Image 1 (tube, rainbow, N blue to C red):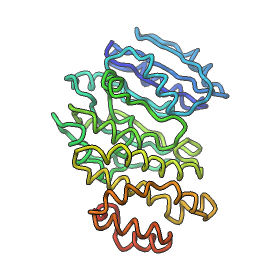
Image 2 (image 1 turned 90 degrees about the horizontal axis):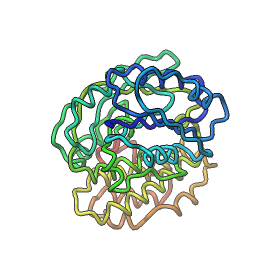
Image 3 (image 1 turned 60 degrees about the vertical axis):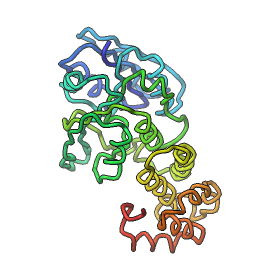
Image 4 (image 1 turned 180 degrees about the vertical axis):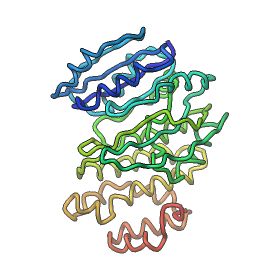
Length: 320
């Protein structure tokens, strides 16, 4: 079997049928669909059970207690049989020729990256990001070239890539359970391990921006999770013998994002607990970068001067 499509499902009765129909319409049919019902309390499971399959593809349903997006994706990876895995969120959809285009580009890559477009329910129209064509890159070359490029559809989003299943399994590339921003943690490490990557310009994925979705909810835990992700990245990447200038920018960004005024309000304007989570050894290790040293000093001082510093520096690209 060529593809496994992993769909985490949680209370998406309004959107699920469109997602499944986009698979029904595929021009390439050698694939399986794995719907992981993550403890839905609405009619999502009924919609899955009643969905009429007219093409010859396998349709698996996994029912589990609510464990979050990471847990649902991991469940799908573990039972997948396809050579390649595509993650599809249950309120999104893919182009009807998406699998055919991906199949035509496969040459044993660890992953293939493609383009996507965001869809706004409030009627806002957005011009998609420009497409990219790159061949025979390592994942780390791809990461260092594109991770900091400003795009509407963020680089870290795992739904913008097709992954070789054995590559994920061999490198233990599962999603960390119980956190927000799981893509932020997963993608840089995935890129580190990938030896063969291709990037194609085709718009294959359509991402729905809706009020009330996981990514749109305001939750103080998001801030603490981002700092914990920075800690995990620092722990993983500091020992690696690769060019780390880009990933160090990203780690610094993960740390200081939690200290911006809008984020601080989410946890009662008391940032002492957040400061205690910071891996200060990371800043000692990266002290050779002058602006990292300044970030370290400003984080120690407090949030107000740090906010002013950001205005002066005008963005991430100048931190190293």
